[in-house]
Length: 450
Ligand code: B12
Ligand code: SF4
Ligand code: SF4
Image (cartoon, rainbow, N blue to C red; front, side, top):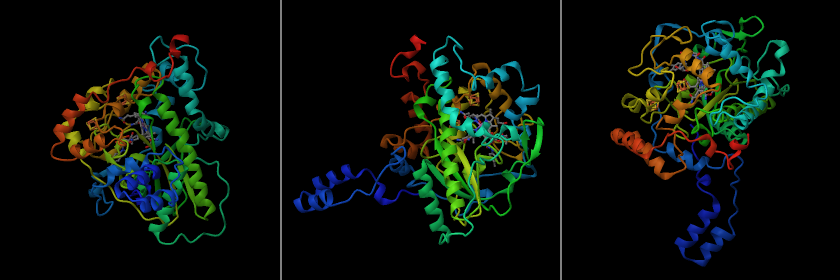
């Protein structure tokens, strides 16, 4: 897993001053402040080094086996077909399809002038939400005439041909470090590498034209999967449920598309194959766990030590020889056993409490895996009621915190210790996870003008 390099700890100005103060000598001030060259330039969100401190004491497993990942895959396991996921079913299955689901999707495309009187669901909120989706939508709609929805039903395909000769990337460890460095520079918040695992590849893709299955073609030999984590804006998530909170999702996808295309093109320019994939082609959650980005939670999502649940994942399938990361455990499973914030917070009662089970709520769950599973039909039905995606389970999860703060990093250590009940109690006392009024997100009271 990626680790902060020592020279990224804090910004150099602060570091320089503190050195001068403690050393108390003119010579060291000159050496450390005046003569040192600041080689740290933040190109991304700028706080990666602070957040990465959360990983320092987290144990890493010896391998990425199912046992190390906490996976319980039975003999009756069957790969999942994308035609069974709730979004695909909303197009053809009357159990999920309705006038409301039609309206839900259409409002992402058409300019809304009014929706609901409720704050957080007004024109400005939808205007911004839809704008954040725009870049992802451009790719999704680019090849609709070829029955493709890039990034959602098909891999992102807007790429140039690669080089004919391959650059020698050195050892797999060096190669992985290079690709991760490039990915972070391009805007990735987290990067990990897992071995290709056929179990997570959809048996089929969903074809809009056929309203049914089409082949899920993935070239042979793509043995590595680079998993990219894209943080969702925490202040937007705090307003969930609101149309405004949907902007965190939209930005996640749009930024993900940029990073995935950039790194896939980079790999191709080095002479390797690379298929960039957002929601299409394969399941992201088990890959993110195998790649050491986080642990699985009762809400069916991956919880990371840097952003809690407030993060999205994309992936790149490649034949570049990259070293694999290994899973981590920092007390999520144990915390989920005593916490039920997502269960009680979920307005559609889609998240059951209790131990992991192999039972499926309906055909939209994977067959043959003992795990916590949510009822996707109930979840999506709520989305169609509020006319926006929901992120309440992301907001209320106690791990969703700002880990640039030392206080929150301390909380994370407490949560991963036998004192986890105290951590949970503190979380409730702190009032963290409370819903923020969407109107307070905007710098001026725009809502009253809309
Ligand atoms: C379809 C889908 C949904 C649908 C329907 C799910 C369904 N059952 O059909 C609905 C509407 C419910 C949904 C809701 C949300 N989703 Co969603 N969803 C997906 C999508 C596109 C496909 C997943 C799928 O095929 N599920 C069908 C079967 C496999 O479902 P399942 O058996 O219940 O398995 C789920 C989990 O158990 C886990 N999982 C799958 N295989 C395995 C194997 C093992 C061993 C384990 C332990 C877990 C596991 O992943 C599945 C997620 O649905 C993925 C992207 C992707 N390609 O993975 C994003 C994805 C899972 N969603 C994501 C998010 C963030 C959300 C929402 C918060 C909405 C939002 N703001 O974006 C909510 C959260 C609801 C919740 N608590 O799960 C993120 C998760 C990020 C994270 N931190 O883990 C993903 C990865 C998208 C992304 N680009 O980042 N989603
Ligand atoms: S997204 Fe909302 S409705 Fe869906 S499971 Fe999470 S809290 Fe429940
Ligand atoms: S809200 Fe609580 S139970 Fe749900 S995933 Fe987060 S820690 Fe686990």
